[in-house]
Image (cartoon, rainbow, N blue to C red):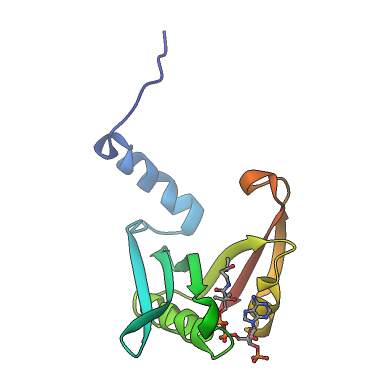
Length: 137
Ligand SMILES: CC(C)(COP(=O)(O)OP(=O)(O)OC[C@H]1O[C@@H](n2cnc3c(N)ncnc32)[C@H](O)[C@@H]1OP(=O)(O)O)[C@@H](O)C(=O)NCCC(=O)NCCS
């Protein structure tokens, strides 16, 4: 009988995954992920943050926010740029993220050259989300 129960990270069949790396990617892959968290500071106050992770050549932006009073001054753009610089040093070539389909933040991502590549209907809390990506230059 087969039983399903909780596993630890050490029981994650890493070697078995490496066996399929070769047919999938043509080589064995280092799957380590590295998280990042950056802040923008103006006159000793935090005015914006970006959080995410790098893994397998791609950066995921998990959260990005500028405090309301400081918006429109380029802080969000700078935070994304710094996150991509962090990723590039680790070998990243692409950034991706999701945002609400009808949120005004779509304008921000489009201005930065992100391309909408997909939709996630009925996603977080039943809201529709969209997927954006851009190449790291
Ligand atoms: C997205 C966000 C971080 C952008 O921060 P920011 O510091 O204002 O960004 P920038 O100043 O670099 O903006 C770059 C351009 O995008 C525009 N822009 C930024 N946020 C925008 C928004 N929410 N709606 C419409 N346009 C926006 C700016 O006006 C600016 O336009 P311009 O180049 O013509 O002057 C900010 O709007 C925010 O904190 N939103 C709330 C949190 C959120 O929803 N985060 C994203 C969820 S995934």
